[in-house]
Length: 327
Ligand code: TRP
Image (cartoon, rainbow, N blue to C red; front, side, top):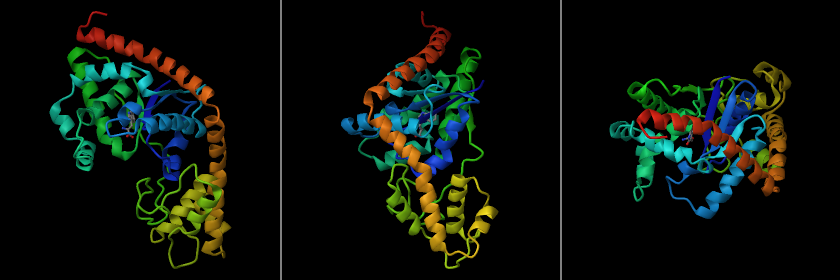
């Protein structure tokens, strides 16, 4: 069985786009792969965080990931800082990473521009920590968004360099872009991807929003001046709504066209809004159930950390031997 690893920042706010494009697919992978997922709080502190908020968000992200379908009986789900091997592997890999290659990371350049008062060393070596996350579990596949591709490429280079220097050891990870990962566009501007950082609050739908808010946002979604529900390049707004409706219902685009033939945009938008809200309802309910039971969540976290520690101990110990430490 191949191993999958992915990390989620506890500061991430899950939008409908994240859900349909990524997280929903992760749960589908659990039977075919050995999946290891981490809430990466150590990555989060490379930018300023309020400690009280970070702690709460880490717990909430853990619960939300479970509510989205990550089953802790099937997969390993843990908080990064609960496994000290990540910090230790970070050091080993730092010594196989070049200053020059880290300087070329576009995310580092972007983030340093955004936070000119806090260009800390952790922000610079962030991709090394990330490489360690992946390599500690000898992951074959890493589900990531396009924005993390450069970091994954660096992880591969670091692993190859280590293997070349010390003898074949690390599995070289491949990016994993899910086949049915739908690309969901903004409701305010269907030419743009749905993003949590959109200035227009009506552009993005969040997983935990109420049914009323979700329906209202879909009613306001930007479309076009025609009135036929038809999937077409020149109708990006309607096409986006059709994609969303298709993901929720499993219907094809032509089935959706047939369903709404002769009906106006008002009816269609209402149907999409209600269907999305109903699709997300079980996630919201499960999230409420989980967050109401903090002891249970902390218990799951503890088990996850133990499982992660056990797998990664082996890798770290071997890496220590390879570089010449007495173990
Ligand atoms: N850097 C990733 C992001 O911001 C999160 C992450 C950390 C990650 N470690 C990882 C993703 C390992 C995949 C694999 O989205």
